[in-house]
Image (tube, helix red, strand yellow):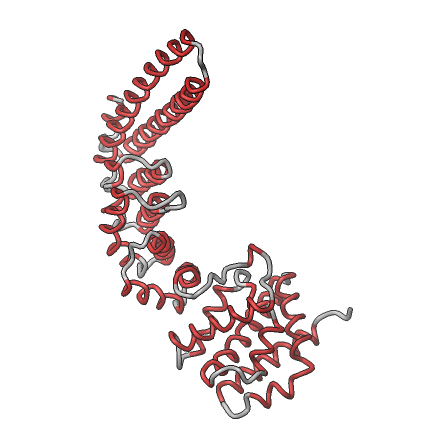
Length: 374
């Protein structure tokens, strides 16, 4: 410990970085040893509960007491060493050293580390270096996840303190930092830490031109803004009624948040591509395109949604020749090509919708012309 801390103070960056990495590795080693002792203690407690022989119980109890004391000593040594090292190097002038420290915090955060370690994430969120900011936000995510129940009072207090900084980082100039902050925001929303006005600030990022930021914002919207999570592609294709319901939710969202700039629909579709199965159900899409159940704004929105979906699929098929894109285009062609006159007639009174419908027909006909027979 002594020589590691001494070398971590060296004025030469390379030596300082190596010593810091070695020190963080020592903390990882202590943690692994703590895990093994904790496993032994858990096993000993189960054996103690199952054993009825007094002599055996006394032997197990004695060893369990010794191992618990050893575990406490190791945990104290781990925390003391980690806190000393981090207090000196988390603010190092070299970005790589700061990044190594925050990466270590990410590993330890997954173990629900002590509160004394978490304080270093506060200032790392506002670090000058983008990769350090992103690493700090990634380290916060396992702390804020509440899959096993509500957050502890300590973690919830930390989340409430960091909420303004995390929301600020959602609009970070670096898209990777913004995406990491938005994933943190998902955990904050699930833990009911976000305020009502926070949701609109995040929703606006769905229309961002940079894909990482837009994709993360779209995930947030799907989980916490829409009535149902439409990111269901990993669970298979939704049935017809669910697909139509999801499409109608998307149309309501478009009308509420992007009207009259429906041309931004393509950015939403790009983020939903291969994630939302409702975009692949062209029986449901055709029903909405040709039916009379939608209001005027929704009917305009569905023309933009259908055209953007086919365009994204066509570009993907043309450049990457993916099976998913080809399958979607085939379904769209089978559903719409026999109905092209009716489709064009339906939207002829609205110039913007007519232009999108004509573009949709253009992509479908180009696909039909280029696809090999059979």
